[in-house]
Image (tube, rainbow, N blue to C red; front, side, top):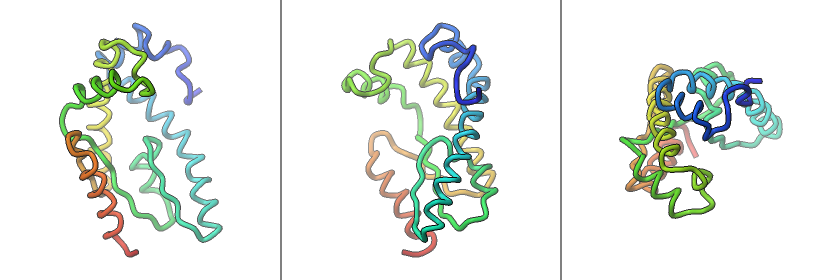
Length: 160
């Protein structure tokens, strides 16, 4: 049940929109529950590669700093957190790209989502700091440079 929005309504339902806008902490709790569940599979995925002596690159919101800090394998990590308000960039991308998952939603839903995302990003940033992880702030106006900085950080933090 932690993986599904049972009883919380559709993503663009008025109830869920209102929660994102008015109670982002409640939505954040639902999202972290889902991330904790997905993390279990992520650990299995990593273990599979380690058993074969290979590296794996993992990206996504299922990589919670508190869970990563508990692991016993060698890893390098960087957390990417957008700098500032992304609302205009997200709205523009959703309207310009019909394949964007947000493109089917109204501006009101997207703006509510963006308010929640600001809360989510602050959570990730605070948690990454708490556990001593490197944080790279993403500049929505220079995304490629931000990603290059993240890659450089990973490559510089322990070898080849």
